[in-house]
Length: 227
Image 1 (cartoon, helix red, strand yellow):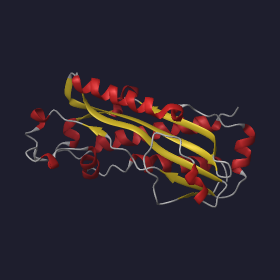
Image 2: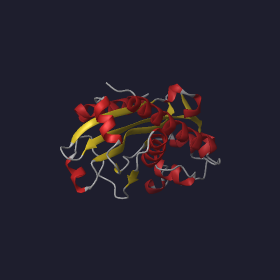
Image 3: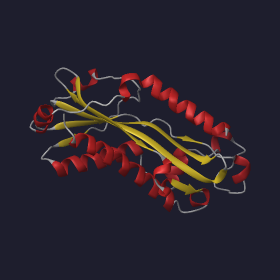
């Protein structure tokens, strides 16, 4: 129960710190028309914040995937995702959203390799370094992969991401949407621990795919809806 309370408290803290960042901005018909006629678009991406991950170590210590004697060897989302080929969630959302937008229009979306620092603020000045009229930014807001308070054998994946469309000339955000993917929305997001502790991670990969698909579906639905 303590773990659940800590997770909720941190999520509330992150949301509170974000301020207006979490407030959606619906795109207007004129802004979308100008955007889609603007030519090439830069796609930026923030560094993915750490995904919160905890284990009841006494319950899984018999699994020799990691040694818990050295804190540096303790399980983490980074280790679990690398072990089972789970791609970075921000990058996956970006690529899926680019593919969806490209199917909807003739937009030429060009991702840049350099990532912006993770932030919960409304930074926009950085877009002026790019020669394009618009910058589409993708970020991860929050992620957690925790065992249930009453079931340490099941882990629950929660995720929140965001996309912003920023006009370079005046740094105005003409569209913004945040996705919220909660583990309770699908059984796929509930992963038995033996899938990734000693298993092949198939269900973990499925959970990550579902989370990013769900996020992109929310972003796309928002973009398709105009004022």
